[in-house]
Image (cartoon, rainbow, N blue to C red; front, side):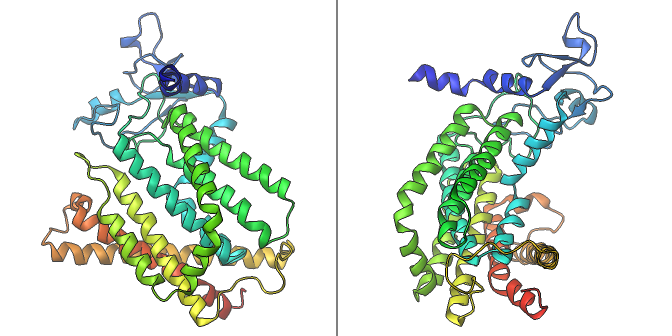
Length: 403
């Protein structure tokens, strides 16, 4: 068992996958005798040279003890230490980068609400609940287990923002598995569609996200496999209680209080690290979205206007006529503008208030990493984003004749 664990965690396994997909490190002349500067070599060769024409160069933003690169204040030295790589299969390159985007904030703030606006708020609520559960468990496990990400070299790393985070489990793999298969299990009772087609789509998309974490060099095979298995277990364990939780969330008088207080408590009690990591802020963001949406869906139920499909369930898939597609596109664009605008306004407002309260200079950008500022700022901002998404946006669409 220990041998299998070590094998699945071996960074060389990730490097071999990258090479099979056409992603190669580029070696500089000073540290590779016999190789010309800019020559692509098998992963495992240390990099230290200038970027050559036609090759991409990864970016390095910051460094802490869980990263693999050393950051210096000298721009030239930093440039020379950045990893360089060559892409030989651009189709796979963009496919995996796009797939990796399915686990980023831009996906959560656009595609998940799009299900609310264009398909069924019931399904969006289910997805947000499961997404929050698996992401919180995954993020906490990362910071408790403290297992590192694959080292570079031999791995090529295409992302740097989360390199300060620990590796196991892959929350991208957890979220993709939870979102696509929760949708697959929930949709048949709401929308008419061939289950086999849905299963194929869910399997394909979740697999692409998982493979993208290997291609971008952010996770080992062990991280990804554990992420998928943990999500699968959580779905199987919670599935019998989904309907009961729906009833509590929508009808209980204490539902809004529980949502706000419990999720805020989880944000403040998130495990502490001896260095700054984005995991606490990202987790608070997710918990805030869930809190806002949970309260919003409860409000809609009390007001008797849920915007769910009318008629006998499951309803047919809406026909893809030109007017329907046009209205859907308008809802998407206006909805994204509303959420992004709300996020920007609340982020700036909350930070100004907290900086004033704690007497922090506005020029101190690092202050937003402090727990007493980061947690309330992000939780408030994204709770309001969740409220706007669940309560206001569809009502605006109705007034504009887009529903």
